[in-house]
Image: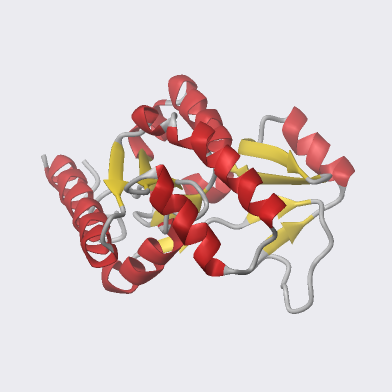
Length: 209
């Protein structure tokens, strides 16, 4: 039995958060994270060039395509994808380092990335124990379209593409451990906050047991 004062009271969680564009997932977790504390964002690897103001190791790990492909070959990524010609990936080490020290780590990823992590859970007991899959659902497809159009920042083509993607993403909601319907922002933020606090308590009790 480890009685070291350095041992965490519980293991951390990997919070996989998905939801279609316009569901409000970013707004929800940004509103909740201040009250929750103890949540970090993983730093992804990418092959794209840094944008003005971005810092290597803080915003992304900016690496070459050759290095990225080598990491894929080494099975170093928990999930990875190519988007618009650039590659993005989350290192397993980025997640496990935090989990092992008792820190929760949040990933805001699409359903394809979540599927890769779900598959990883089947092969790794440590990932299986750490991962919690959360889906943010709009109250209706019509409301989602209204929100996207209310932004007034995108072309009609972009809106239609996002709506098409949203239909496919919403069909995957049943594969998630937890679904929060964002029909009222304050209620959804509270539900998200209460969910994380409840999961933390469960794990703390489990560690104590």
